[in-house]
Image (cartoon, rainbow, N blue to C red; front, side):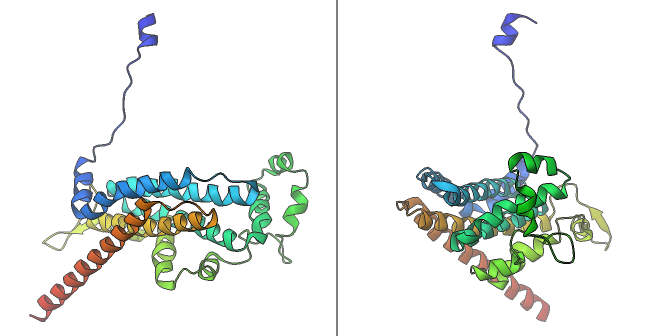
Length: 279
């Protein structure tokens, strides 16, 4: 290999052929696409202001950052029509957001949040790693032990739904960001069925690209993820007493209009279908 090949390498860029799906996403979600750059800029302007000090502030900050990163991943998946995958990540994003809100409201449980990591390492058979991190790891795990044996399933004694309700998430939202996505975390018959379309002769054909169900799930997952991130950003601003960011207020207003137009379109579709059925 010549010196020139080392100093001027040619790089290959990887790219899936999703032009059709991206166009479809932009057409059906044009209002969101137009508003998205405002949200993107707002997130950057908000997080750049934060200078965390201490364990609690760092935890609140980093959970917010992780929520932002996971939201970005959901956005990319949604643009490509990967509804089921976006839905799975929605469940993960939701849990991070719940933990952020909960610790901001109940900071006395911060040590539980961190020390439960040793239980997770223990379950993976990595007790030696836990001892390297903290020589008292075994002792710290003891408070998570159940009298009947084993450990409590989460770092808090509350299940995720109870924890979410305690900090203000309502039942209707929980169905969409928790109960629904839970059905797709593992292999699901429903996921397989949604990958087929009914032909005119009443037979089923496998879809080789995103199905209508996939696209619908992608859009709804993105909207729910956006709502979660909106709440996360508001909490970061409030918790760290940050300067107002006009872009964020602008996006919240746009997002409210987007949701309103989607609901109106949905209501019109239902009314039209009902009318056709009656005829």
